[in-house]
Image 1 (cartoon, one colour):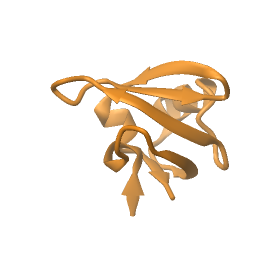
Image 2 (image 1 turned 180 degrees about the vertical axis):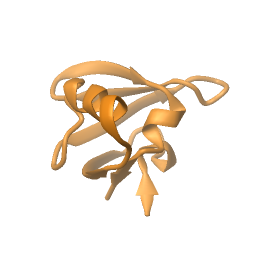
Image 3 (image 1 turned 90 degrees about the vertical axis):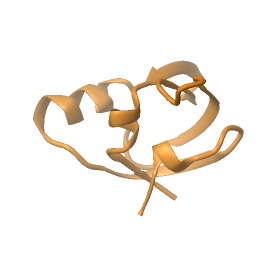
Image 4 (image 1 turned 120 degrees about the horizontal axis):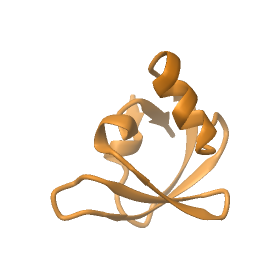
Length: 73
């Protein structure tokens, strides 16, 4: 299982599944990260947290913990 946290800078991946429960999963979905969406990893902060993504035409910063709950291919 490859997660969004494992993706390298400059790669584009597709979301396969969201893990997590309740409010956390809902918050991630509200940000536009849903099944089938393509995500481009723009950059990663020096200490690895947060990760900057391009999703649906806008930039989004996501914490490492949240990125680990998103399965990609």
